[in-house]
Length: 178
Ligand SMILES: Cc1cc2nc3c(=O)[nH]c(=O)nc-3n(C[C@H](O)[C@H](O)[C@H](O)COP(=O)(O)O)c2cc1C
Image (cartoon, rainbow, N blue to C red):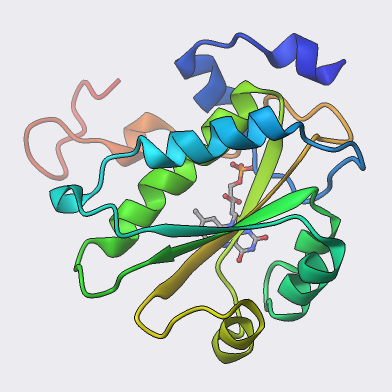
């Protein structure tokens, strides 16, 4: 039901209503939506169009448990329907910027289909590399967990006002900021 209300949002609504969630329903996310989410990552732009990112999709509960054990700040991942590990190549100075772009695209694409998501970055690096056979040349930038929300989550973001965030023409000039 939550899904049907949320579908067909425009981009601004999608950005404005998406929240990070850490509790998910047991309902499976259909494979066509998972493909849509992954393609939204693939379509993302990267520095020099290097497309150095790689994604590991985790659906099996045993591996979700391993992810949870390998985490310092995302133990909730065990309750996700599926997870995506985002790997990037640190030889590019901009690799984390590229990671952020695919992450945001995937989360918005998911939400556009009524699928909630959360992110974590706290990991036990060596353990996770061993468990998921991640090569040493790639950084583990983040892990995303996805699933249908268990309750309505639209709305209330805790955000600063634009007046606190933006200036006109030069840093610090808040006159007429709107
Ligand atoms: C770079 C980054 C790292 C984050 N790391 C974690 C994390 O380790 N664990 C976690 O539960 N949430 C993590 N979050 C989620 C943030 O806490 C969340 O995006 C923020 O509180 C805003 O949530 P909201 O959009 O639902 O208001 C991270 C978010 C970002 C952008």
